[in-house]
Amino acid sequence: MDKASEAVLALKPVTFRYKTEIDPAGIQQFGLVAEDVEAVNPDLVIHDKEGKPYSVRYDQVNAMLLNEFLKEHHAVHELTSGRAKRLRRWSPISKAGLWHCSRRAATISILAMLRGAMACAF
Image (cartoon, rainbow, N blue to C red):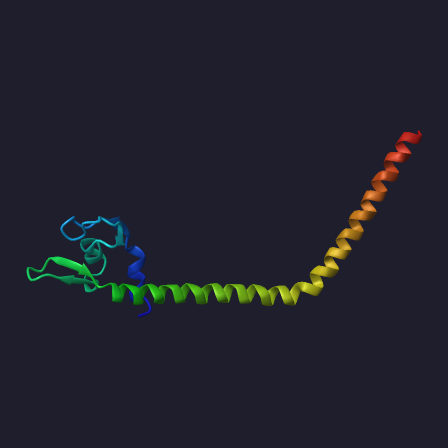
């Protein structure tokens, strides 16, 4: 499926209500417009006897969405596991570096206070 599933990223979900003769309660629905889906990928649409878009093949859309989700999940996993490896590798160096920096900052603060005290003494 690889690249074929990327077509679902171009789909635009909509909200709609069926006509009252189909759904008298008028419950809000969520889905895709078959004509819009056909423009992105005609294989995802069921056509009526006249060849007009009739319905969306949601089973196919769901499989494509799952494929795209899994690709993103693997990409995130690779990024986070790579970051964790880098953190483990640099952790001892970072700790030593932070200790060195905080020691240097303390020395600078002491020198600044001494310089201020000496300026007041004159």
